[in-house]
Length: 312
Image (cartoon, rainbow, N blue to C red; front, side):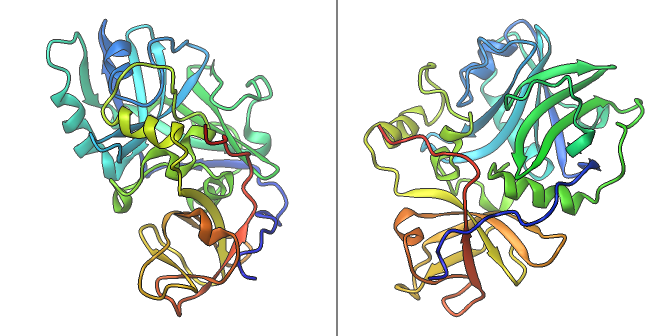
C-alpha cells in the first residue's frame, strides 16, 4: 500500500543558518498588548513569560485559520508575532479592527528585524530543549522549534542592524524542507481559511489552549476537540514529483472528490519532495494517495514525528 507509514527522514542532520526572507513580523505594543492578543488567538498570551514563546492561530468566526504565528515578548508591553509575509498585510488590517479601546498599537515591524533559522550545531547549547522555549543571546531572541528528525532547530530574531548568527549558510529551500519534516505548519496564503487548527495538528504541537477564554472561532475549535469530531489531521507525505501548497490530494477510492490539501511543501536536498497534507484520517489507513488528480504522482505516507493528542 502506498499509504503505509515509513521513516520521514533518511538524511544526516543539517547544520547551519538560513535567512528566512518569507517571514515577517507584527509588533503589538502597549499596556493591553497581552490581554488583547489573549482575546484574539488560540493560545494563552495573558500568562506569557519572557522565557517562552507561543505557537498560535488567528481564526475566523467559523474557526478557520486566517494566520498562524510564533509569538513572544520583548518586554512586558511589547509582543512580536512572526508569520508568513504573504499573510501579513491582511492579518494586520483584520487584527487592527478589533483593537477598539484597548491600549495597544499594532504595526508591521518586518523592516526592523532580521529572521534566521538555526539548524543542528548552530542552535545554542544554552537554549532549553523544550519546544517554544526562548532566551536572549547577545541582543537576539532565540526560540526552540520542533526538530526535523535528528536536526535541532531554532528561530533567531534580532534588530536588522545586528550581525547575522554564526554558522555555515543554508539555502532557505533546505530550511523549508526541515519545516515540513518537523510536522509543524506555518499557514500561508494559498490555504487561508482552509483548516481549523486541529486539521494541522495544532492542538498536539502547542498551538491551542483549551483552558483559556474566548477568541474568534473558539466554540468551533473546542467543539471539534471535545465531541470527538476530528475527521481530518495533518500527515507527512513523500513524492518523487514537485508538490505545492494548496494542491489537492486524492485517494484511490474517489477520483472526483479530494481527500486532503497540501498545507506545506519542501524539496528534499537528496531528491524528491515532502509535504504536510491535511486530509481525512480514513484516507491514511490504506490505499493509493496521489497529488493534483486521481492519476497524479503517488504519495508515500511517512511517520509523524510527534504523538497526536487524543480526542476527548
